[in-house]
Length: 180
Length: 417
Figure 1 (cartoon, rainbow over the protein chains, first blue to last red):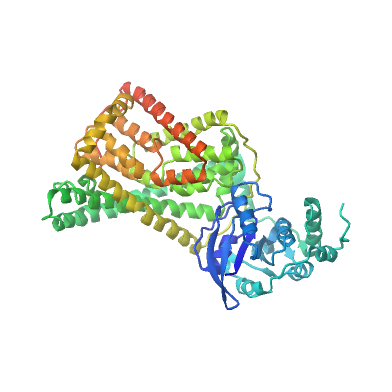
Figure 2: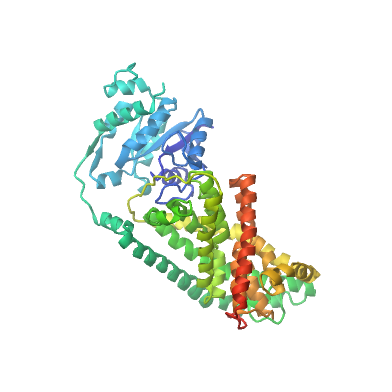
C-alpha cells in the first residue's frame, strides 16, 4: 500500500491534519512535542486506500532528540512514500529547510501551507502560486483546525512529484555548479 | 543532489524573499496577554492563580459534585444493597471476594471487588480523571504549557532539567504512563533518565490524587509538600551523580489560541476511555488478589514477614502490607486500601496515614508505568531507577518515622464516610 508521511516542524498542525485526513484521534495540543511517536491511519487517495502517517515534529533530518530520531528514521524506512511537508505559513523559512532536505532525498512532495489564518492575522502574505512555481511541487494553503483547504490538499496529493533542486536554484537565481 | 547546510539556508532565504511579504504587524490583545503571562513579575502570580484554579475546580467538580453528591448516593443506596441481594445465596468465599463484608452499609467499607473496587474506579477516580483532563486539555490547547515551561526553566535547570520537563511532570499528574513517553523531547539520555525517575517516583497520578482528595483532604497538602521536596532534592542529587550533559534547548512558544470544543472533547474521550479500559481491569484484579490473599491467610504471612520493615523502619501498622501489595498494580487502589483497612478496624494514627500515603507514592511505580520505563530506558538506567527508589523509600520511611516519634499527628485517624 502507498504511504503518505506528514512531516514538518513541531507544532505546525501535523496531528490536526492527520486527524482530519484519516478521521483518527491522535492527541493534538498547542505546544511542541505532543507527538513523540508516529501514528498510522488510512485515507482514500485517487480511488486507492493509502496509509497516512503522523510523524513527530522535526526541525531537520539531523536529529537532536528522541522524537526527531523517530522522524528521521521513519523517512529513511519509507523509501517509496509521498511526503506532505506541513509548514507554518507565518514562518515559512523554518519549514522550507526541512522541505528542501526531503526534496533533495528525492521524495515526491506536496506542501501544506498550514496556519494560513495565523499568517493572515500577523499581516504576512505568502504567494503560494509563486512558491509552487519555484519549487515545482503542489503548494496548498490550509487551516487544519477549521478544515479549510484539506479537500484541495487531498486532491493535489496525486500531483506530487520529486522536484529538482538544481531547477529550484536556477528559479531563484543561483547558478548551479557554483558550490563554494 | 544534496546541499550543504549553508547552501540550503541560502536557498531558503532566496525562496522566501520571492514569496513572502511581511506587512506591518499590529500587536493585539493576545500578544499583550502572551507577554504578561511569560514575564516573571506578572507570570508567576498568574501561574499560581492558574494552578490554584485548576485545583479548586478539581476538588469541587470531582470530589464534591460527583463523588459525594452523586456516586456515593448511587453506590451506597442502590448498588451495594442490590449486590448483597444478588449474591445472597452464594458460598461465603464468593460473597467475600465480590461483595465483601456482609454487614457493610457503604461501598468504602465493604472491601469486595464489585463493591469497593467498582466504587473506587468509577465513583471516585473517574470524576477525578475527567476533571483533570478537561482542564489540562484546555491549558494545552490554549498554549499555556510552553509558557509555564519558560517560567520554571531556571528552577528546573538547578536539577539538571529543562523547563520543558514541566510538561511531562504535569501530564503525569493525570497518569504517569503518558508522562514517561512525553520526556522524549528532552535532548540527552541524562535528562530523560532524570525526568523519568523523578516523575515516576514523586508525581502521584490523577487516580491517586482523586482518592487522596476524597480520603484525606486535610493531609493532602502535606503529602504534596513531601513529594515536591523529594522531586527537587533527589533531582539535585542525581544531577550531581549521573554523568552527562544538560544542554539548553530552544523551545517554540506558540501564539495563544482559542481551543476548539471538538478537540477538547476528542482528547477527553481518548484519555478517559484509556483509563476505563486499561486502569479499571487493574483495579479489579488488584481487589481480587488482595481478597484472595486475605482469604487464604497468605496476607498474614506476608504482613508478618514484612513487619521488620513496615513496622520497624517505617513505623506503620503491619496490616498496611496489604496496601503495599495493591500498590504494585494501582496506586489509587493502594491508597484506598488504607482507608478500607481503617474502616474495617485497623488502628492507624493520622501521621501514619500521611507516612503510608507518601511511601505508597514513591515505593514503586505502578505496573503499567514500570513496563514503560523498561521500554524507554536501557537496563543500566532501569536498575539505576530501581536503586534510586529503593533508597528513597527507606530514607523517606525512616525520616518520617523519626518525625512521627515526636508525637505529631498521633491521634487515631477516623476515615471519612
